[in-house]
Amino acid sequence: MPTLFIAGDSTASIKTEDKRPESGWGEFLHEFITPNIKVENYAQNGRSTKSFINEGLLEQIENKIKEDDYLLIQFGHNDEKIEDTLRYTDPRTEYKDNLMRFVLVAKKHGAIPILLTSITRRKFADGKLEEHTVGDYPNHMKEFAKENRIDIIDAYKITHRIISQSGEDYSKKFYLHLKPNESKNYPNGVTDNTHLSPFGAQMIASLIAVELKKII
Image (cartoon, rainbow, N blue to C red; front, side, top):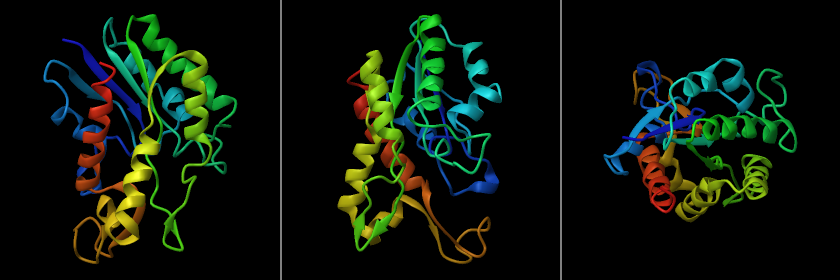
């Protein structure tokens, strides 16, 4: 049975109980793809391409990945944190170099790399979702995929369209928006326009699965 490995950040990762109801789309992906493929989710909160590699997480995947497996690669949210030297990468240079390291790990073992652009942040201005909510990273990933002929799912484009169409108010349901005392983990409430609610994570997992079926 082939395994589908997920390398990514908090938008995909499995959450600890103290973070709930924050959810990652990777937690729900198995619900929407064939049971003949096993999902192993290595995504971690707060990771960029740089920190994921430097902390040995890519090495952990390399120790397990095998021929005919898949490696989903989704980063960008933390790569753009220019104030953090442990995570920031220039989207035109180091970011692309790091993506190549992920791709080469997959290919070295006969596995298939699949790139995913980052999901959109919920950043509205004057009632309209901003165009570039994750900087230039989605565009540079698409450029990298084209240059190297790697399969890519444009999750940024897909989620940007859905969130934009949902509107400024309804789109809150997809993200971690909680009122005070609505959750024991967030007694003061929370307004988070990056991390996902269970509803949002499940919706995005279903959309990614639709695109995955075109590739695998």
